Length: 439
Ligand code: BGC
Image 1 (cartoon, rainbow, N blue to C red):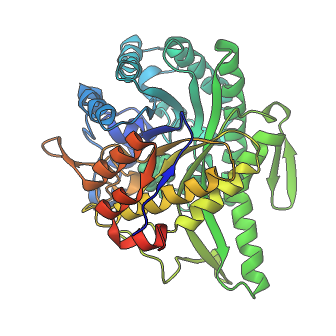
Image 2: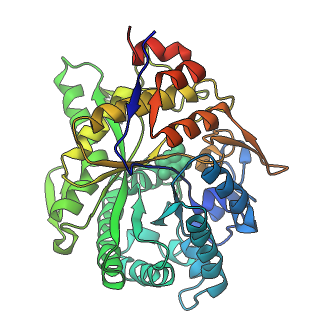
């Protein structure tokens, strides 16, 4: 049997990622809270509630576990509505609570990466129409406050998490607040304002902290034509991928916003990323259909699906995502990758296979600097509520008890080894051994 280790470069960063609303609990002043109160928005009527109770202090035990498990970094987000509950008020206690968290990471030997916007907006922004308006000045003020407060501990910042998902889910698919469907023009407006917000935050961060590293977390989803011989499928896949995958990174690189049929320039958005964050989960196929605006979307019928069918295990799509990211010629950080899998039957192989693809990419000398698994502990999965479980540690929402999944052990071995060995694959997911280490 082959014996080998896929090693990663020295100083490669191994972490996990999380987000304020999903983990903290008791966030009652944002658009998601409002959304959760409305009937039928969240599956099974679930609510974030106490979430993983990080606001109550349970981040301490979770960060202890992460550090103990060899993780060297954690990506978390700051909830705007806590820091600035109303336009004219800053909440210093909330700032202090977050300061303890980022300092807590440092004390445990982990590097904090902080996201300034992860899907949630304060009610006072939301009720005025949210990002349908240019709120970049307000976002910059919040950014200035946060960076000024934490710059002693943090110098890696993600301005906006997955602006493509935010616009598509809120205005085209209707699964995120404000729950609108097929409002294509409004989604373009929101996308434009998110570019403005990102650019304003980028410049603000650098003004307050010269040595900051700033990026966005871009979700890349492989969007491939179902029938490669049919120009309609090829054209549709290209158009959707252009809008979903390329729009934001292209805008941040060039200042040009490329909509189908027209272009728009925001000069100060050009060159506003110091690193390139990639979130990758899966890839899909689209088929043109005269009655479906976005075509009919499906997964490869041969691909293995997660419990609920949400994610297809497509490690090659991860390789494609990294290749795509590499075209932007910036240091790359995998800011999220993971799978929902309550009983952990699939996660170990998903992890091993994805990390193997990342190792292939690293061997082409693509400048991949780190990997953040989503997520450390189960958390509130937006409109899917508590059914979808992404954690290395499970969470009993009623008792707040953490349950270690086998994948937590696997990931710890990867972090500590700075690589993935044949022995570890044999131990946690022998079913993919031959694929990763062919004899
Ligand atoms: C988001 C996370 C989410 C994860 C799993 C990403 O799109 O940034 O907030 O929990 O995917 O669906």
